[in-house]
Amino acid sequence: MKSGIVSSLFSLAALSIIAGCQAIPSAEAQSMQTPTSASSGIDRLLTIITSPDAEIQMMSLVLARAAQADGMSPRLMLCGPAGELALKTPPESALTSFPPSGRSPSDLLAGLIASGATVEVCALFLPTRSLTEEALRDGVHVASPASIAEEFAAPETRVISF
Image (cartoon, rainbow, N blue to C red; front, side, top):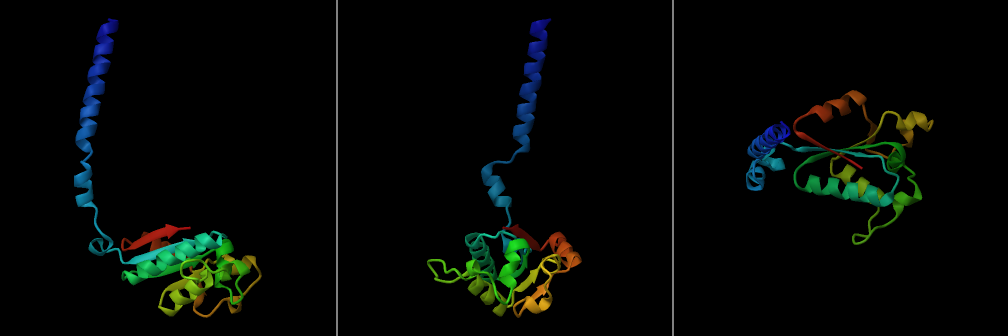
């Protein structure tokens, strides 16, 4: 009886493996099925930045600029410590220059705003700091939670967070 159970379990395991292998397409087939941003209709990028780290902020802004250069419409929401980038007087860390460009997160943010990117702080940023919109640099607004939720759900939007 013991060998019958073992044999049956072995047969079930073999069938499961075979069925699983048939359900998983080859790497070549998967690469052929993966659409590019342009062909898939993804033309908007929502970048959510919360990190207080200037290097991470810088990289997220570099990627947003690259996406913009590739034709995507970037929208940035800065929240928590990253929201301080959006202030007229940003923290010293936002003014730190990074190689190889010698530009700072504040410089990149200004460039994104100048080139038409939508830049917003989260709805909680100003009230939790007892600030008003007057504290924000030109071109930065307060995000509407409903609008951000709508952006998340839009099939033409790619969302990244730092």
